Length: 212
Image (tube, rainbow, N blue to C red; front, top):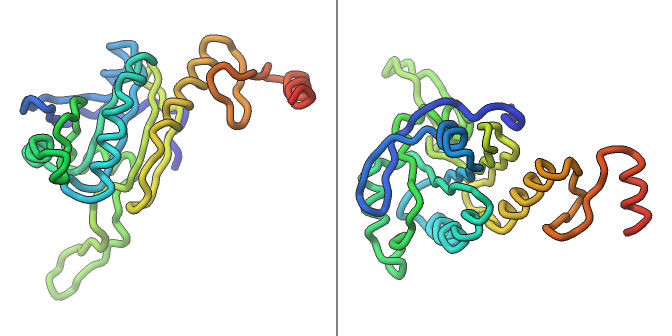
């Protein structure tokens, strides 16, 4: 079920930063208390293959997000200690040394379960052991959430494990949402900052199509 248009879950999660500090992060409070937008991106596992390319890509774009009054937060189900080990590993050795934004450590799966982004293929009852067996890796897909200054989710997307994200698209979506907030206009297909937007009515659509 989509969470777009709803408040982000009010759940605190342990996090780690590049300095080795552990602290609790509540994404909803980060947005509301700081009056900032938030991009929260989930990835499956530390020390894997596609994941470091994404974390470095978000780091490279960190200045662009900051210009847009937007916080960047990464997240997986790995522990804070594993996060720090990865943060301390050089880039040319598969690590993410140089990443400075916080990484959530959702080891309990509390937040990822509420969001519904865990790779759990099935649950079955095993009569022999009298237990519930989980099939699937029980880690998250590549889910991304954009959250506004009031804690409302205005974008969500989920990629399968092998598919890395396009960080520039999240910058474009933030630009578009900010334009809507500021100008009361709506943004047509392929809109980018500086391009024409539309009045949110039939006349506005007709005028836009006629001029393009």
